[in-house]
Length: 235
Length: 85
Image 1 (cartoon, chains in turn brown, cyan):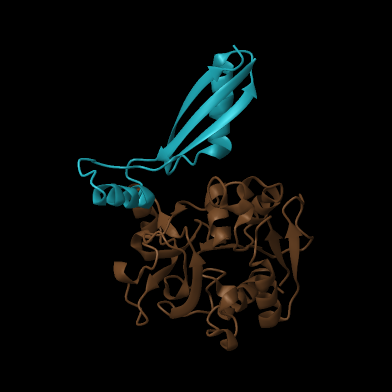
Image 2 (cartoon, chains in turn red, brown):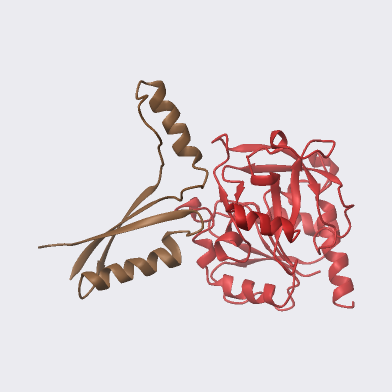
């Protein structure tokens, strides 16, 4: 699985993603600078990592969404190949319009850096095909702007279309406002596009890739992508 | 001609404005109990060249549409004044 991780000024989870992918799959993962206009040839997975691109100025992800590399990222997604935005990467994806919604300041108005539990709502996506449906994952979050927002009618449509992939929950898997650390509407922690090949998520799977880190639940996401790509590309 | 464009951006009605709510709570706590609501937004000044005021407004509108404003969550207002009169 050839992975390209985009680096914006202020990205700080890029190397973590490279490490997680390499350590989990022993496959190639490389960094791509935001001013490049092409992705490395043969790129199968693109990751927009977490961090504070452009210092979170104006709106989180707004300026990164206008980077030169985004044209190539968009084309990659249009080809049906997987595109993953983690944390700030998720914010960038909403700002590009590749995913619906916006990430607002946490309800608590504080930066939250903690483990949380999320429930896998769909396991028919490239990112989740090796998880069980309803499986509860323990993955850390680290953000100030993570409250997923969509106007009511759009939110209903998103739910009807089953585009919520991860939802904050209790350790037992119950979804309730109490278990949404940031106040996200409907406890939404991750959403996908209609086609299912673009995923944005606030939790950091790259920080939960080895039991040494406290949880290895995130590693299955990379394995899922690997398996899905092998199947779909007929390798 | 140089114009100063003033762009006022604020959260849309119905968008949870956590900051505004926190500020409202604090204002009430220090005695300003008669307030109904507070919304916190931002104010951007842009100095630009344009042939006339309408053109300056049009340019500012494009800036808002392409980068400065996220229409899903924000409303905005543009005011223009000519500089160096």
